[in-house]
Image (tube, rainbow, N blue to C red; front, side, top):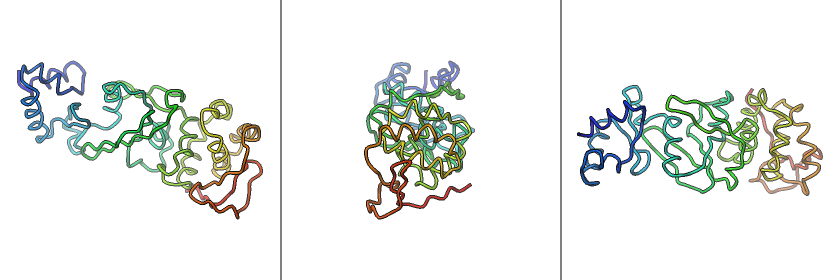
Length: 260
């Protein structure tokens, strides 16, 4: 069996990926020979390697990308690496229909930190969250199986908690305005203890700015019970000489204008 036939056989079984080790065994050749064959196939665009030793089969419709779309290989790669994960931040918001702008990178939340992946035109950014395995998630179907995605409420908290990875406060408020249609006020309060209290303080204020004050209401009770100090809306600005929101115990040190 040559590599082309092995790939055809793998695809016929409904798999879109294979490891270099699997190819070496199937072809009955050394790892060096298998890597050489894979390298030649990659040069022709038939496969891509988003991670060392992990290869994906690239059908003609995705050759221009130089890789499979991320949702079609990230779940399989995470399983290969033995990592718990969820699709989060702007990528999760897009899955939930709150895609003000198409995210430039595919954002994946995992417990440990990892460098980003580049595969053709695809970029996968890993965001470290210590308690990622505790965050509520949903299963979403993909053409290659399913992927694990943060719930809408968990997505809202992550957008605020990792605002520097989400285009700034204005963009986060814009996405929250779209996400608000499917947010549960009770759901936000239920998972608030999973995140730092300042995240809830900022999220409540941004929901109000985004025109979703009714959803933010119950969260204010949580903040009143748990917040011990005023925190800045924009963590990058430490000056405290700004107006204060008593409701959210927030130093409103930035003007946020959603692009609605």
